[in-house]
Image 1 (tube, one colour):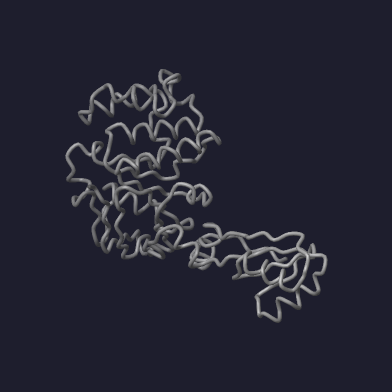
Image 2: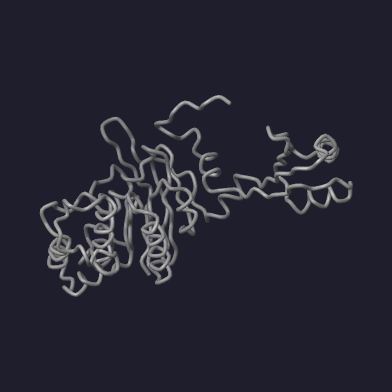
Length: 306
């Protein structure tokens, strides 16, 4: 089984450290989401793994070997870093045929990945006529061309329409289900939560989290319950007596933090308070991510005051 291993990896550009002593392993058989604010070092790390940049210190290997030492690298690692990489004057089919010939990949794989990515009907059109979403699909087709053991994708959903986003989600889950190693960089928290099993989160070039998705969310964001009743004042007194962390919303409802709907419902039933609304508010990956990275963003807009 092929894993991606990063050990004590650092990269300096002039006097700036873009990647700072990263150590992690991306395991096969699951989708690993690669998250972090702008400038966190995600793209630099991917370039170091793929041998496009040389590290200042440390090492990155795929299946125990640096990318530069891999034989037939497209058969081992498929990657998408820039959807604009294909020459605009070539057709998608010709772009993939050149990649296949230069990497000793059977020509039949070209037609297979064009079908898989939905590009077969437009395969003979010049790439310059493609939309961003179509270029993304072509980049993914190139990544899959060698039927690789590991797949690294940087923002693969960028430019895709809703149908395309569902497609890429299904594709990633299938690749992991086949035992491949899948590493996906993304800024789309909702999508990452939908496809990822595990998370690697960077901030200012350092590793902030290496954890299963559910564990990360539940460790950083506690559940909440929203409650409405015909007797909001009595409910406030009840919650205060039981030392719940509660606040009154603008519409008169109450939000209780660190609580479960079952517990609050039972409490109100025992007190004889009528219930108009009792809704759990589940924690999200976005909330947990923002909680972790609030101080790690290199570029951020000022927060608006309520």
